[in-house]
Amino acid sequence: MDENYYSLKKVASMFGGPELKEEITGLEESGDIASQEKYRSGALYRKGFKGSDLSKIGSKVGYFKKFDRPVSLCVFTTKGGVLKSTLALNLARVAALHGLKTCVVGLDIQGDVTTALGFDDGIEDSEDLNYILEKLNRTKGLSDIFNNTVRLNDAIVPTDNENLFLIPETPELVALNDSLSNINRREFWLKEKVVDPLKEYFDLVIMDCSPNWNKLTTNALVACDALVSPLECKINNFRNFKVFSKFLLEFKNEMKIDFESIFVPTRYSLNRKLSLDILEWYRSSVPGCISGAVRESVSGEEATALNKSLMEHCPGKAPAIELMGVLSEIHRRVETLIDNETAGPHGEWQQKPQASAQHQENNSWR
Ligand SMILES: Nc1ncnc2c1ncn2[C@@H]1O[C@H](COP(=O)(O)OP(=O)(O)OP(=O)(O)O)[C@@H](O)[C@H]1O
Ligand SMILES: [Mg+2]
Image 1 (tube, rainbow, N blue to C red):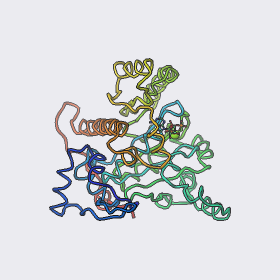
Image 2: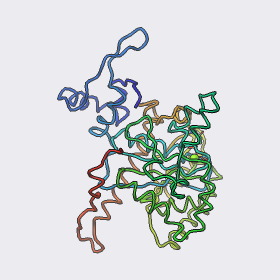
Image 3: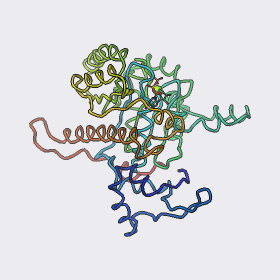
Image 4: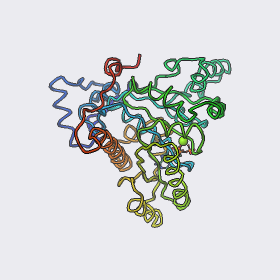
């Protein structure tokens, strides 16, 4: 976790809004959270909460509470550049900031989420080829798990947030995609060998897919409780969506599986009528579309480039407030999904699925 400091105002904005200031101050006074510390900012001394204390605060006052059972989300659509990895990054960082033990599984050879979670930092800054080669050699991923050359535990790497972990993307994902075509139950490998075992330890597993409908993607769809699918507010995606939704339906029927689809409008422009019209059409015509949306913004680009969520980068600013709305809608949809599982086929109330004993006991990764 970084040793940055965050003012009371920023922390309140990050987890909901300025109205949380009083509640946070109350928790500070009662000793339920660590007190603000004095830190030096240029020539001045200021007061703020340490970055490493944020998740405690988030878990108490925030909007992204831990679910009643571990959850897996797949971020996918068959269109490139529509903010899949950005949504995966923001979901993961925000969940971790709320105290959820979160693991991101990178499934895109481009490696964008791996980069965005800071895994390549040392590599990009280094001029030492030997160091780079050694680090690349040491990096294990899904392909190594598939080939049994590494255990799942050993492929998981930490990030700057103590609650956030990653299975990094490696170039061997290409080979893994081919290998998956040649095994029995080829769509179920990721679920059975990776995602379900991860759910023993993590509260949330997020899979970031490439825009291709390949074996890694179909494995991710089989492994997810819910699909988070961006709908870009541009005319090309508008057309792409029809084909995509037909594919999805056919896939679910063929595999005899069902998962919730949460559609998230992205990259809409406030000053473009066509973009706003498409946004309205999505909202009114696409079943499962949320009412919030992610706007096209420079701060959005900056945040991803800085490996941060928008809420960390510019809390309280319009793009961050809007994204907070999107994430809390996704959260509500997942909660409803879990609640509906607990009602039996005739509406009778059944016991909620319990997190396994291992999950309850071992709630911290290693
Ligand atoms: N709110 C935003 N507005 C505009 N651009 C953004 C915003 N947020 C992020 N970006 C930038 O848009 C680009 C594409 O985003 P991203 O990588 O998330 O898309 P993607 O759907 O994952 O793409 P791919 O299909 O290649 O995996 C990135 O460079 C990202 O930094
Ligand atoms: Mg991506």
